[in-house]
Image 1 (cartoon, rainbow, N blue to C red):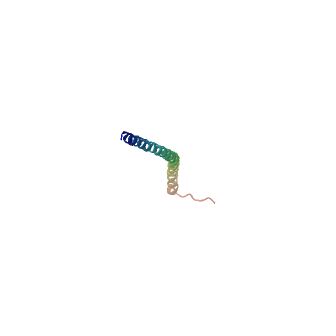
Image 2 (cartoon, rainbow, N blue to C red; image 1 turned 90 degrees about the vertical axis):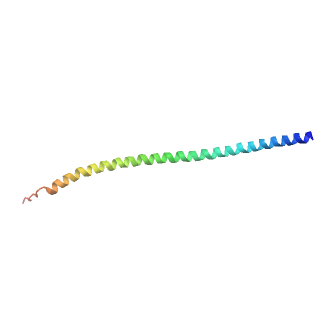
Image 3 (tube, rainbow, N blue to C red; image 1 turned 180 degrees about the horizontal axis):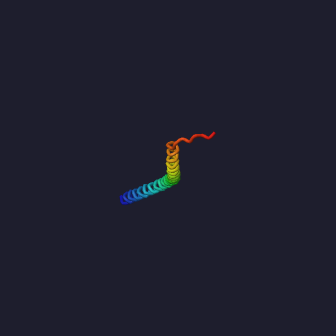
Amino acid sequence: MFKTQHHLSMARTLGVALVAALSLSACATYDDEFAGINSRLDQLDTKVQGAAQSAESANQSAQQANQRLDQIEGRVQRLETAPRRVPRG
């Protein structure tokens, strides 16, 4: 009977070791998946940063264009309100 208990104990120990080994191999699979996901997230982050820089540059250009339009608008209003000149001739 002692041998049977010893065999059961050994079988349980091997079973636990097998489950532990399978769990660790599953973790390695998840590590690979996480690495792939992190790589894709890094790529997206780089694209988002580039888009943000482009948007900031476009915003600055638009602000400069608006300032030039404001300057031109003042000159146009002065010309429109100035008395008309009589053509020579």
